[in-house]
Length: 252
Image (cartoon, rainbow, N blue to C red):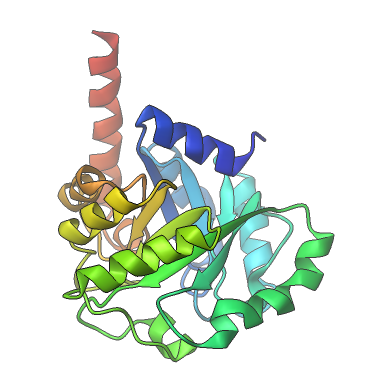
């Protein structure tokens, strides 16, 4: 498979927007994989993320192996802990929670992961992970013991993202959190995008096509959707329709 990060960079350069479907092993039944992935394959999704804040050891590996049977999309680990690392995936977001100040999630977990990553064939993508206030406590906030950055403090969010880039991160991920009441504000996405030279990922709280388009228009290079896909079957139809419309326009 072509390098995952190289493809993300190429898409950014060419102005192609990417969409990742996030599957949480802790909330996803194995017997749903085939039918779920059929819908994902027929949508505008370009990547599959797998991971969660609280997942039992071994579960992620089994789920990734099952997903691979039904899709050719790149599968990227989005791990909440070292126990979620599996060589079955194509790549891993090596997440550093730069919005928080818990040393375990800034460097501690990464050191613990090295012994597993050394033996794996995963493409490792250093990613600055920024949790932003969304109106409710998220699993990330609870597990890591960190607070999200206030959405009213644009400058702190911008400076944190830029600091991540200057530290050598290859991606910046603005996250409202799983099941967020509110998506990351467009003005925040836009302001951060203007400061960065690296790709920008936005996720959390995006529940419909309008919010998806809003994130893209604000500057997101990739949008991540999880709960919306799982809870709203019509969302698949909307994204499938978007593919058909784009194909027609491209043929003209």
